[in-house]
Image (cartoon, rainbow, N blue to C red; front, side, top):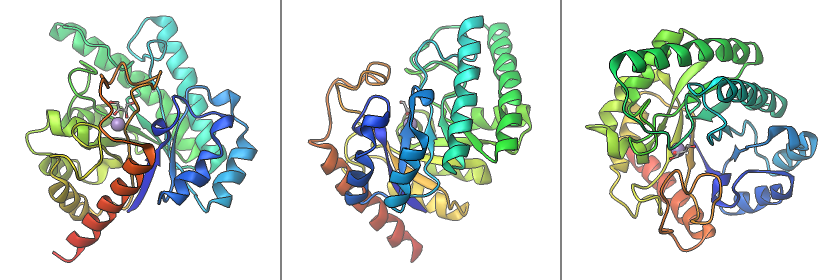
Length: 286
Ligand code: LER
Ligand code: MN
């Protein structure tokens, strides 16, 4: 398993001026950077690729961002712009030699409403259709789309790993996987380790997030249980620490970050990565 850092930690959307953070992330102990990008077209891809390769970082996952204009179940313009954006992320990942794009691709974040069964089914079918198209493109590019269930306060569409499995079954593409986030699982699953075991080989990406989005290990997530489950399903992918400073303009509002539960980005990175690696190594022997 590789341990890395999501760029949300230091920037609201990764752009060319953030490229120097790659060396800093490396010095804090990251094996990779998860690039959270709102405007892929503006990136200087050769320069970014050089910086990542100079830091010895390969196969860096790309994290999708879903403000209101990116919504696969929204109005026609929102659906179109989400499809276009996702295509650009697939292209970016392929250009960088990255294998995974991750995030809640099905909806804008923070959209929560009551819907009757008929409307829920209509939205499910709409999203499944779009994901079928997008995974077709991803398959050609050798990229996997990992969809992230979010807690009930951030979406009404997909809250559990079981719901993500149902979507994957409906779409029917090997390029669609589950992106499991320990923060959302802590709220929504009856037992996070059991949910991971049931998802098995469908788990394609993991966010390591404390239950309060502070330092992993200084919180009440069942880290040993989650790691044992990941070991038992033979997960060999990536685990990225994801948290947001209170002044992050793209996600802090939607994720209800009102108190920053860590002192500095360096602290949450160094202490969090150290905790995750130590815990992972310790359960290999159990
Ligand atoms: C938001 O809560 C989250 O977990 C992110 O990965 C979604 O963009
Ligand atoms: Mn997440």
